[in-house]
Length: 403
Image (cartoon, rainbow, N blue to C red):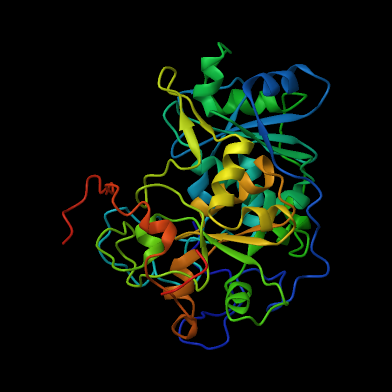
């Protein structure tokens, strides 16, 4: 893994002019040459994926997403670790304080396009493919899959990806339908993905990387977020939607925020709360788990539309107002972005990759960005619910808005 931010020409810490993390952007201006979002990610059911595999569409590349290569996969599937798509080392949940490396500007953001392409190719993705991602383990929730899909959406023009699909229910949903699985074998999976059984990698794809040929329409930068927050953007700036727990959104303390290395509590001014779940690492507001099969599926279109309408921003977003989702570091908000695009069909949505950590703490100009905190009517309604704090294997650790 490359050192955090090593691909940038200069370090940004301590400077007032931040080197852009996404070189295809120039400051707050949208790149005129950036590839348009010419496809919309899709939510697929197991029967639909089976139909794809048995149909005339080719090639279909299936990729299991998880923390480690699984023992069992949908036949022919490759593997991708979503965490590998990011700059810098992973931070353990129980990490009490941050090292300087962890707090580098850009830590946890997507790798540069050429590195993302290399990872995609290693997972078996090649040019002109229809790609379907799914949660690799039976008990996995959809978060990692959504983060990986969002990252692939960003580089989709480079690999000429024809479509991106998300298997609802993951491997558990596939198995619950009685569909077959196979042991995971990287070499066999590679041969399965290649029509001639040979090298499945697209030739010379990494030599054709041009930063402008990525999909910037799915990504929001700190500069763009700060401009919108401070009303320096257009007359109707994007709607900021916070996808953290109520406690994180309120920003009244840090004792139950499980990003224990974060030293700033709060939210973006005038942000809407999009809900998530009872704590940082425990969600549940956007999906349902069948008590019999234990299959976790995203909420239906009607249920999600109702949920986010009750949060105050759903109708505006459905009518065309741009939405920028954010959380702590871009994972929960990646799932929200996918739901907005694939489940609800909203026309304009982006994910703020840096999230609250970058906005409030690691960006060189973080101290100048406005913040808000305090209870709202919506969060007060869930304030009496018990919060679940998860700190596995680690030592014990001692306003007015629109919503």
